[in-house]
Length: 114
Image (cartoon, rainbow, N blue to C red; front, side):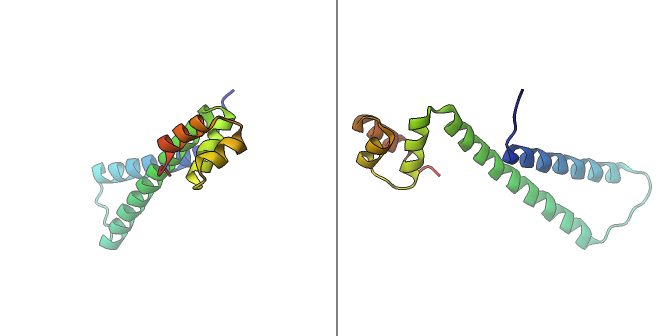
């Protein structure tokens, strides 16, 4: 059984809302009835869609980062988190019970990634 995190569910809701708003706009645009919208309302809807797309992109990045951490064995994911916190290879090696060479490799691969 697939278990979803709250972040994944939030992304799903955002995507569903974006599709719903898009479908609604397409339906209204193709409708034969004349519907008048205030320019401010249309601009507001466009801004909402842009904001949803930006949030969706951020959530996808976060999901990718979380998947990367979850796919990595525990001491290595802890080491990656420690590198991102700015700790050095020597401290990481001791805290994660890995060799200094492994800690240096992890630090060089993940330094500067956020």
